[in-house]
Length: 295
Image 1: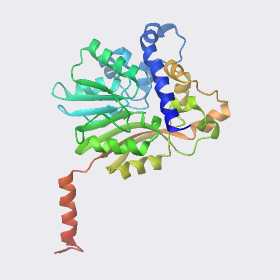
Image 2 (image 1 turned 135 degrees about the horizontal axis):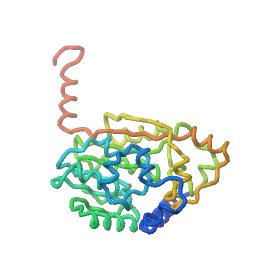
Image 3 (image 1 turned 180 degrees about the vertical axis):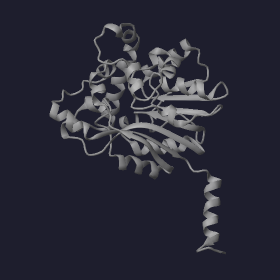
Image 4 (image 1 turned 30 degrees about the vertical axis):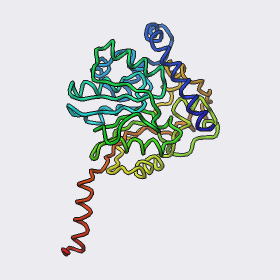
């Protein structure tokens, strides 16, 4: 698919989910789904306390980890959530940075932004600003945020190189990044690569882990660390009501399912935008001390 077609498909898929969020939550006890969003979130690393702290309709069970826990947020920080959806991670971050802090949620889907704003209003959250925009061209000023978080979103972005450069641009010098995402251990089978549903469902758009980390380095990030890596439970994606709502996932045979399982992985990765003053000081130090001699 071409980049424009991919973005349109993703936008339409998540618009459907945003519209269905209210009815889904009101009827989820009898919808026959294998998993509920709160149960999925527990499996992905969220605590019961965290799940209860956010408005119920903000948790759609679509992530692949808990980037808020990885970010180690501090009171008063400005946090950007890229691909914020209905706002779940934004609400968790909001309680950690407190009233002196600020959360910005950016999502490409109008319906998701509207849903997130409604959730914020209903939950009484006043330090969150939800904005509509692409991750490749974010409506955020240069050197503005302390921390960027993202939950299973970069794999959906066609131009990942541009997305990482945008993340670097909006971070303050010394700012940090904490992402949960889906990456590939090996190339996906052809029957997945060509599936629109598999792209929307966070599979077909994933890239090899080495390429993912190289793009971060190319954007300028330093201290890139994979904090955790695990096999992603693809059965959750295929069985979940929310996932079914946004994408007509291909029906895998057991053999095909095993091939996909062996190809994908969930990672938690952190990185830092270098502080200009420290960067220059280190360069000068390295220049002045060569082979143990001062110059």
